[in-house]
Image (tube, rainbow, N blue to C red; front, side):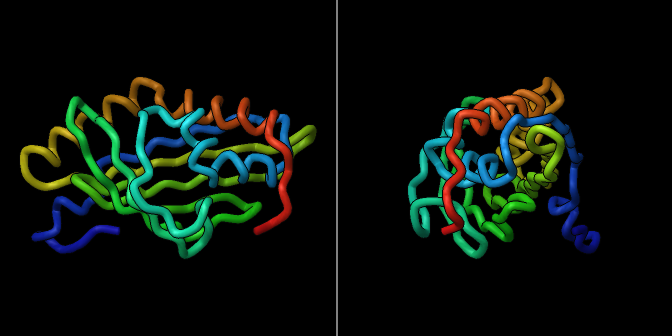
Length: 163
């Protein structure tokens, strides 16, 4: 993940991981991880989907999203690398980089959901500000809250057939 000395802004600043139990099957959790309207219910920041290949996130799809972070409107190009009953993996490129994983494991009565976010520092003053604000948000428990929100949303989500 790290580049050479000249690519210091691409180095992972830090990674946050949390886990929670959902009383929902992995396919129900997948629904709330891949549909923009469902994501809005648990995401720690408000966002707008400006572009999306299709109606939901699937492996190989891309999206353009924007939202306000640290009082600054920022945009991200999102690439979805995996989206199946094992979980979702994506990267987001903008003023900072984000590597995001949601791992889903069947468990008694539902699923174990493990969420991980790695923040790659951005360049310039805006990138540094956004990096620090994102780190503060995650350190304050935003990922824990999002994971609990995913579990709550999934518990009420119907299991849809694979798209």
